[in-house]
Amino acid sequence: MGLLSSSASFVRYTVEGDLPQNFWEFIAERIALHSFRDIDESYEERSVGWVSVLNMFDSEFAFASYAAADHVVLSLRIDERKVAPNVLKKFCLKEEERLKKARQIPKLARSQKLEIKENVKLMLMKKAVPVPAVYDICWNLADSTLLFFSTSQKAQELLEEFFKDSFDLGLMLQVPYLTAEHLLGPDSHAALAEITPSIFV
Amino acid sequence: MDLVDLIEEKRFLGQEFLTWLWFKSDERGGSIFLPEAGEDVQVIFAKHMILVYGEGDSSEKVICQGLQTELREARTGLAMGKKLEQARIQLVRGEYEWNLSLKATLLEFRNIKSPKTMATSEESDEPEAVEGRMLEHIGLHEILMRTVDQLFRMFLEVRIGAGWGQELTRLREWVHQEK
Image 1 (tube, chains in turn green, purple):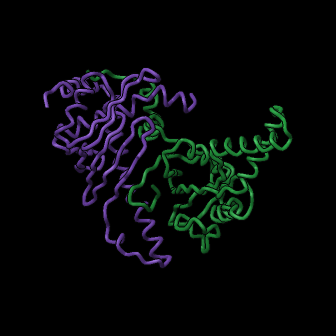
Image 2 (tube, each protein chain N blue to C red; image 1 turned 90 degrees about the vertical axis):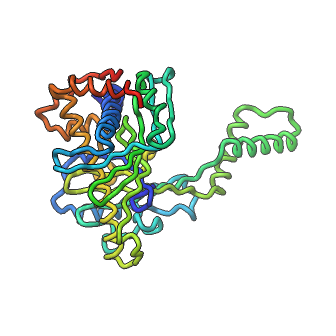
């Protein structure tokens, strides 16, 4: 699905805001600051950061490998530990049964059940392997546009937020109407705003 | 207007563009002249289309699959007032050929098969070769986007211009034409 794959999918964005004068210095600093940190050996629930499009384990970017002519090419990597709801339910019930037997009581209080749920979730989360997701971006600096190689709305929302955090720049999804404004120029905006749906039958 | 409202309110723009593009391509056997570039591009609608009718809970969706000549059902859908939401398109410009799905509401480019090029087979891992491959992929995506933008601009100029009434009459005739 990515930039270098044989079957790519993308949506387009415009990058809103001015680029700093010393852009390449700025970008090197910001990418380093927001590069991906591995959580395989920790118990953290989630990690988000930039990696190389060529290698999801490369967050060092030797020789500024994210620069390709006047483009910045990166991958957004998200690793997340997840516990399936039915697995959580199973282990909660198991623990509840164990406690009832051990204490020889017919029923557990609601607060006890909640406590069990918290503890079981923590225990399962520690055992869970972080699931990775990687989405490529291609940022054209000359015309301030960006391709995002995913059509998932959830991934798009995450990108918009993380891009803002990383570079202090906004992203605006180029839906047809905004593309139309851009293609036609300001003189035609009023005419464009006035059109209403046509009936084709 | 915020983006969510803009998408809802102007949803028709992308859908009308896709339908118009199908009509334009059908008019000259798949060939469309791009005045801006002074050249013909081939735009072939084939194999897969999604048409929609209505919005929200009451919306209907029709998926049509088949070869070009078998897209009668999609034409029937248009004649019944459904709108084209997604289409698989083969686009040829000069020596390059892409196959992609265009989704109307958000103008998404999906499942793009880019042209095969010489460099694709050169799998060297040298940084220069890798950057070269990357730039080539980017370049091909940019030509594709530019072409779709030029087609979209062509539609928009007709759409907001005085000639839209006439174009609409021709488009309606095409919708009802026996295939």
